[in-house]
Length: 324
Image (cartoon, rainbow, N blue to C red; front, side, top):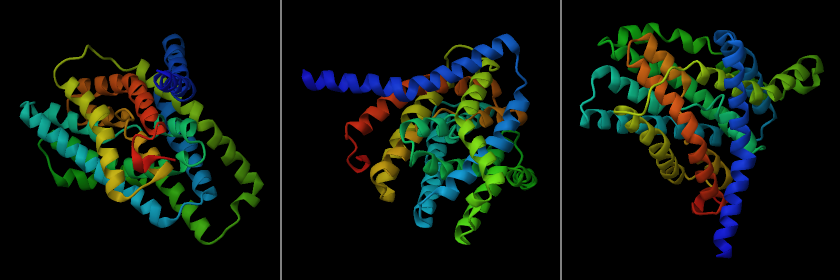
């Protein structure tokens, strides 16, 4: 009985200290947008072009993560995306969903919100190692979304690789890609970037501001999302993303040989909700955008419960290779 009480107490503390701050901030963003109607494109651009690149550059420059581990994290993320794509495709075919819904299901389950949800989550749950590991996941997820994701979105129109090749442009317009490349170059050459205080200090300020700005932006995005009730393929999407994702994550951390905090961080990250970009791609290329938007909305809300449960499982040491 004492053990059960202790575990329940730990669960409450984890929710209070890790998940509740996320709810408070994106709830604030949601409420503020309801009153003031923020300009969403401007907020997104601030995240993409300022806060996220600065965060990535600072964290990678300061990091003590070897290249081999970074490559393994990238491979882990790619294999996770591929597994989720296979599961969602097989599920959609089993239930005989139409082509636009099938593609929207793939988009909303394969690519998760490792940016303005995942980075704040890791900063709260694992303040030292979490953001660094998440940087590699974020980079891989962004590139995959604007290559493989664009290909999937285009295929909902019944068109093929010609358009996909033309769509590689957005990848090279992602500042995050250049931020991580520059950071590794400077690390490799032992350039003392921190000594250039007039540049380093502003970068630090931007990096420190990412968590708050990203979660406020997430709340604004949810406020502007028009959704309807749970029905049809939406249930499939929620189960695949929030249950299938962590199950795949647990399996793959074991396969890739991750241990301790790194394994725990990667597993927890797979419980993140669907990425907002997937709804934008679905809208742009005439996949089932209403379904994709609803998936983003409901997975974001429900992920709080899943993250709390998963974090407690990790904390209690129930996943042997993720003990720390």
